[in-house]
Image (cartoon, rainbow, N blue to C red; front, side):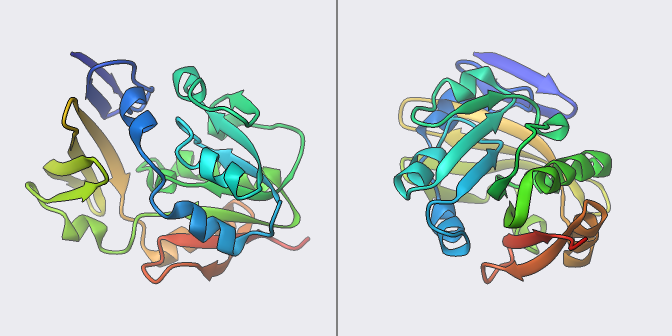
Length: 232
């Protein structure tokens, strides 16, 4: 059993962990969860796609199968080692500058819900810096009301995995520290993270401050947004 912690984020269980407490082994087991269908419906076929926070490739593989030319970025070498078939970049998202632009940039896994506003701005500016004129940025955010809908003991299944809310601690207005337990038949992990329940207006303001503008929400729960670079 190992435990890792950084900036209020931690993880426990077997194997390697990322700096924000994600279990590499656990994420390598996860299938995509409908995200690539949303991306494929919003992006042109065969587009060049920069996947920020690609992790162990649960979305990379199905995106490649759909014909996208994916470049996968993650700060964890152990995560990137799980990805085949796409060029990978080992780097933190917030300081990334590849010197090129892509038809599509994705920022998934609720990374935009970081409780650090300055960090959120850096993430979104990286998106804006890498999207081509006429391209789009696809951002996944926590659905409205998610924090209010969860409570300790809440549980749901995803394939072979059962997820349980161990604890949910309000830290300040709209900011919570959540601990989730991930149970498989043969292994168990926990992850504790801090997130900000971004209102629609605050999310759209953050986009504008980073040089992006909302084009459309792509899902009924507004958890996916298509954003465009500001016109010069």
